[in-house]
Image (tube, rainbow, N blue to C red; front, top):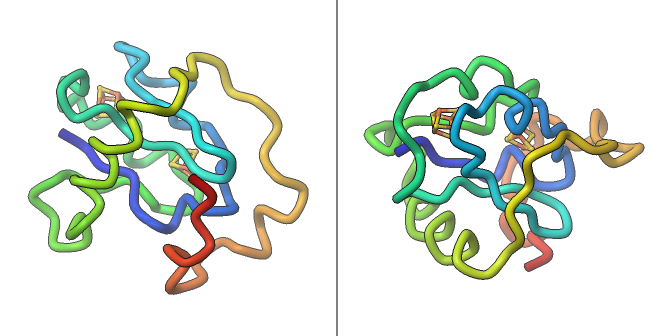
Length: 104
Ligand code: SF4
Ligand code: F3S
């Protein structure tokens, strides 16, 4: 499965949602996650993310995020259409250590 990592937090551009063929993104207040059992590993979302937040679960950057995606995908609502990103999304792009800012 592909995994959303902390690069998404407070960026939440949602370009990934538009391209996923199986609608397996789930939305929290300030980030999205991928349901690992629903993702078909097509890979089309990875290059669409302006924050480069999406990686395959085989990537070292996935780390703890595979488990966190599974955990939050079980409780957050499914999202199938791109919405309006946060107004200050660009200010958070590429910032390190955003896990502490996750709003679950
Ligand atoms: Fe959806 Fe494909 Fe991305 Fe998985 S890899 S989340 S199926 S777009
Ligand atoms: Fe997040 Fe990137 Fe999608 S910032 S909402 S994973 S396009």
